[in-house]
Structure formats: C-alpha cells, structure tokens
Amino acid sequence: MSKSKVISRRSMLGYMGTAGSLAALTPLGMCGTSGSQSSDKLVLATVTEAGQVDSDAYQERRMKKFTEQTGIEVELRTYPIDQYANSIQLLFSQNNPPDVFRSAGTEIAHPVPYVRGWEASLQEYVTDDFMSRWPKNSFEPGISGLHVGDELYATPFGS
Image (cartoon, rainbow, N blue to C red; front, top):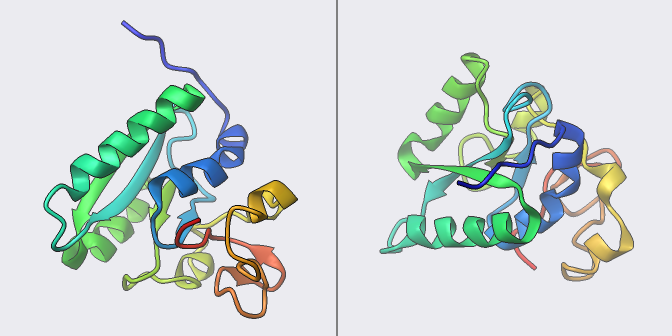
C-alpha cells in the first residue's frame, strides 16, 4: 500500500504549472477558497471530451504519470460538457470545490470564476522556466485572457 504525500495548498499551487502541462486542458482556474485544503490529494475537474472515445482514460493515464513524477495524488473528476458548468457551481455552493477546474469553453469561462471569488492568483509562480513552456506572448496580460490586471489566474491551453 502506498502512502500519500500530504502537501499544503500553497505548495500544491506551485505544482500546477506541471499539472497544467500534463493535463493539456483549456485554461484552468485555480480555486482560491476551499477545495481539498485538508486533503492529501489534488482535486482536478474537467470535461469528458466529446467525440474522444477514451478521453477519460487518457486523462487518468496523464494524472497517474503526474503522480509518479511528483508524489502528489490526483483525484480526477470528469463531467459531460452539458453538465459541467452546473456541476462546478454546485461543488462551490456546497463548499466542496475542486482545486483545479477547466473554465474556458464552458459557461463559467474566465473571468467569471475570478468575479465569484473561486480563483487564486498564480502570479508568484510565473517564472521564466514556466513561461518558456508556452508560445511567446502567452502571458501578455493585455491579450492572454488569463489575467485580471497584471495578475495571472489561469494557464494556457497547452505547451
């Protein structure tokens, strides 16, 4: 039996650049209020990709690889796209939100999560190494769609 590594919520945020790259999901919002603060796993919510036969299985394999590389266990929650926005809103209203969730391409696209207080700034984790994983200008506040002012609140689509 493997023992899960307990990490603080702040440390978990530091790993999200890697998780975002591994998951290759459309902009991910970082929950800033509740989530799995006392849990020993990272809770990631995403959509089942329409037309992709093994979308969920693919994401499970990616998160298993992330866990092997970081020691951080990931609980992956997938929802059909037509139920996703309502499911995420319900999780927040029940004070049981995911730590990371997909916002772009849904009814809860950025900056809605920011306005509702569901996101935490990722700005302190934006290093040159982190930015080098995405195309040039991906992190330009005026054009990225991932910022509120000069603060980064979501990650780009893919690397």
